[in-house]
Image 1 (cartoon, rainbow, N blue to C red):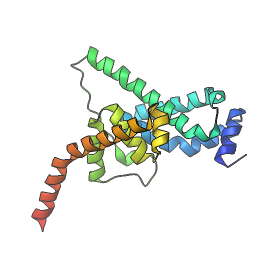
Image 2 (image 1 turned 90 degrees about the vertical axis):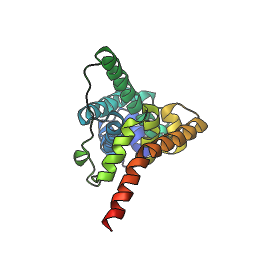
Image 3 (image 1 turned 90 degrees about the horizontal axis):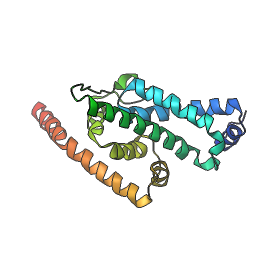
Length: 192
């Protein structure tokens, strides 16, 4: 079985099952992490991750260039997340009395080295308050390390639109975090 990513993708396009398994194992944690930060729910994130890879497998013949696999994969995950968010919004609009608090249980996220500190939970809390289109660019850039060009491909935007959205998202996130950071700073100064 090929181990080089390009060879794996070409094998996937030919329908080789082991290539799909290898790509799944290579990307499942990244896709799950993206979905978790977008949806803020472990179960829904796991479902969307599975749906994403199912769609990858079912549509493997549509992948034209092996070099665009990662962008294609995150585009599918993004679209699946946005579908869930839209369905949930419609449901909330229909049933306004049914409010559901969403929380991310960071301690059970895949990848043993993922965040567990109070600061990270605070960032996740503020990240959840961003509009989905702001949240996704932050997640794709800061957590998935996608390039601006890859983010543009995933979001079907221009490079300048991605840069603008990322700038606005970071500014909004900083605005949300400023009071909490000031409280933390005051608390730290009070201890010394």
